[in-house]
Image 1 (cartoon, helix red, strand yellow):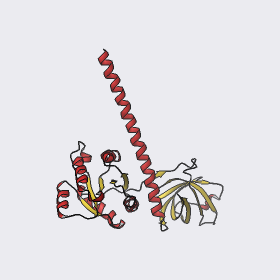
Image 2: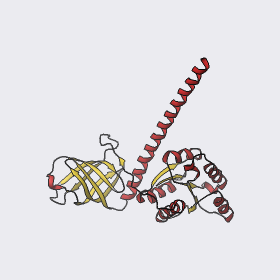
Image 3: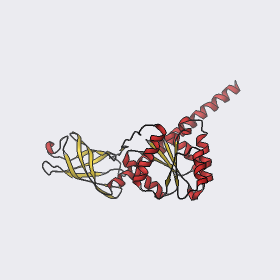
Image 4: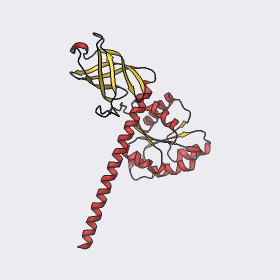
Length: 272
């Protein structure tokens, strides 16, 4: 499931990152009203969450009207949830009449947010959402992205090091470095105390080996030490956001080139 959130609050954005990404829900962020519909389309979001900033319901309601009147069915029928601090019966009635599907208090707990968004999706579609951990790639050849990793083999206590190739809340793929006995690892083996640093934070996890050959190993996480899930969630969100922005820029460039071609074609037709 893809969810798009409009908010200018770092606190609210971070709360929703912590709440949704560990549940296998992809989250995308937009800070500006005028860019929201484009973001919904580009990310194929199924629910949009609107932060009613400073209780400005008029602005929120005008945006909802634009969403409900959009030419694309995927936009027009998207689930809409409002983040609110306080709201009266008048605003609730108006919001429901515009097609708002739910309300979340701005101080809601992360556990409530995740279950509530899933419930909203079920009510809209009649089926549970598809949930899948987003896996993001890491370039080990880039000094800015290279993430080293170390752990000991439970078979012979051999120290094994490597670099992470991709990561999700579900696990990691690792390119192994150096030499060690081949039988130090095997598929199905549980490895504890796997350590790596992610954006300045020391992460400790345990995992089951799900793939292993020569210099490649993949783990499915069985445990993430406190704080690790949050750090991985924010890293994944950041990478997803960069990929989304790159895709949008590429699509804009492609659209711009098409417009230039059409303009040249029209000019030629006029000259002819």
